[in-house]
Image 1 (cartoon, rainbow, N blue to C red):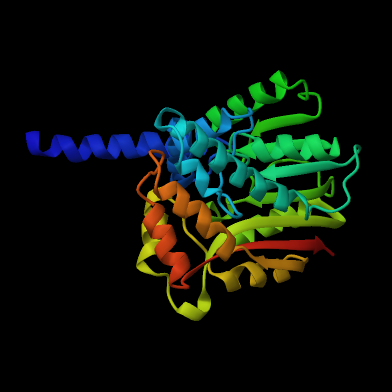
Image 2 (tube, rainbow, N blue to C red):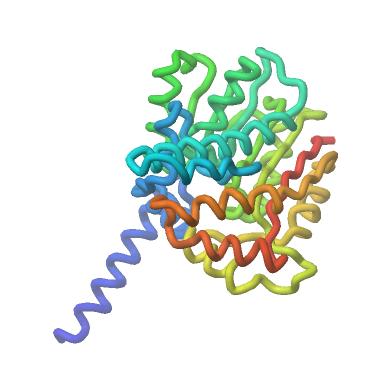
Length: 301
């Protein structure tokens, strides 16, 4: 009988976990629970230390030329210089995305899908003074982001919600722009783009910056598999983005390959105390052509 106790206990745990999935209207699968658990517990210095520079906390990577002089100078301030430079590069990435959201006005409503700790949402509001809804399946991220909006005195226009970007419950056609900044690899693109097409007004703009595997290379490379395992995600092929956009009334108007301009960010990060161990996988994948870093902007027709 003793040998049966472990399987029975595992069945009990599985059933309890399955029941919690059913009971939670935001998290609809065990996979989503695992992703939410990861981000609820995440306290990575490469995210938190960089955000402390100016109170804008991002959860994405950087682009642009690196100021390598940050590695020189007094040792006691070297880490501070590196942190500031990495944050400058990730903020530059966010500004490039924001620049493709179209002509936004203060009365417009926009959505940050997979908002992380809210950095991009705050920057959009600072630039356009529009209404922003950020959504995340991480309750800790949502709470953190709402505190940042309150601190900046913009919580009347920038709000973060514990909701699933595949089924937000927001009103159809109510958004002028929606973006995903490195969050599309956590969902099926067919479901995501259908949800976005429903929420966007006709003529509204969708923008994503994302890593995708290069169909011309073949199947996902070993480095991409390492990235998937590290972040509990599933990187999509480049062709899948365009296939599913076309199927959901999203017509690309701009496609920019940012691969070359993101490599310097990873080269700098790999030389710092903030490295997480995944840097070489990114660099290998970018350099061998199996992985691409794209910006895609599309209009809802």
